Length: 114
Image (tube, rainbow, N blue to C red; front, side, top):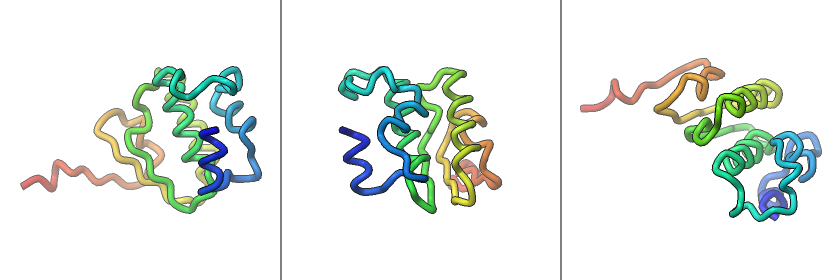
């Protein structure tokens, strides 16, 4: 239901559907499970898949590696590699370089504190 609601506002890229998104996010076994019962890592993978796989020209991600183990961080990076294309990516992060290493510029707000 979450994916279908999201699709009403932003369609998925390349004609992907609910089952495609679930497969890509390794959530196909949880298709009938309410999102409220997902683990924090499952919820984060769902949110990232919805954001990255949506048909948008601008991709905004806030601490994308939160609640992800090392394997899921690698999944996130591969998902960006496969689906970022020519879109603009803005990542807000105060954590690990793996969250923003696909960005070509960095703005460190610590330099702007007064």
